[in-house]
Length: 451
Ligand SMILES: Cc1ncc(COP(=O)(O)O)c(C=O)c1O
Image 1 (cartoon, rainbow, N blue to C red):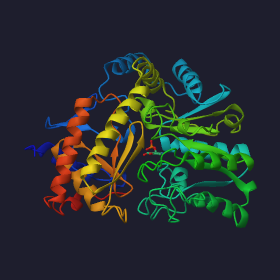
Image 2 (cartoon, rainbow, N blue to C red):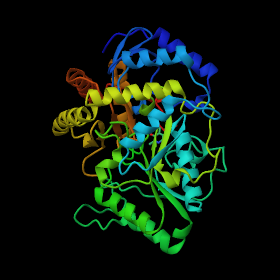
Image 3 (cartoon, protein in one colour):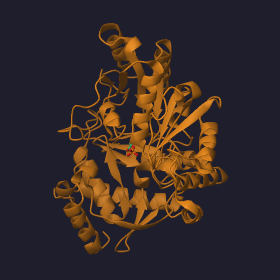
């Protein structure tokens, strides 16, 4: 293991504990990052790390991009921002034009800006209600859509996130995300009758009038639930069910969009065109930006000023986003995400042949889960292994966390090199062996809590 002096890291972590609310953290390990280049990070002590998390998929373009930094500097010197609430600026208009062109389907679309993914989810809830004149919203168990009241209300990932703050938004309904690895109905591919979709149909028949349902919010890959990839047939059938009943299909692309899966939007892998797309994280090129993209008639259904923030779509973040999109195309990063994703998946599949503890390797592009299990027979989630291995990996210089209680979250910056991937996977294998030898103690759980 690297011998590391973590003094400054520990001091910063202790000070954060003293001065900053714990409500904004899911702690893993006391590291304070100071610098990043591509897929490498450096902490305040100068220790180097390979990044397998991309700042929770919000740094797909990689860290420390000089071109983006230059554009941001120029914009800041000219005019950081002037609120769009009352006046106009060209950068957000140009960005809106670009995003409309990127979205699946025709260009008869508009964009609604905010400053975070969560706030844009709230915007999409408002738009869906305004457009349909209906109030009820459907989403999935274990989904995470954000931390504002609306976004949290349609999420269902953590009781701790919902305690002591209610009442949340009424009229939200959760159903089972299609999880074929751990099918709630005990089915496999051969005898599946899409019982999870039938759950929704049953609700429509018995207690949830379709004419009161405004929208279904779906992540094209259920990220924080464990990077679960739904079957294409399910997504298509759900989309059809929505269409048949005048319900909007809304794709939450905050984590899976912006090249994470090798396309601009994760939903493009499933052959459906959503009514609304919600973006956040990487779309801001390192600065805070949230976006809803949708058909013009839906986007025009909210009256002015139905979703307005002083800082949303500000010129600096929009200039950064435009530059990032230019780089993305120039460097063909969507294809790189597919190719590197395959390379990474292959490497993990080889590890799976060696280690029983790896129950499943799945994902699209560079949104990959390595699911750790207690045994392959039961496929029970191995929370302890995931927590301990991630902890040890961070100690050894690899930024890695887990989702869905057991799945290593492999979402590196798209610019990561093969050499960096090879090194990172060596660190994971080493840490896995240390876990299997009983060399990682229970003290991990003093820090690592999970959702
Ligand atoms: C799928 C998904 N939706 C919404 C959000 C919330 O985005 P933000 O943290 O920018 O508000 C997240 C954040 O992790 C996410 O992964």
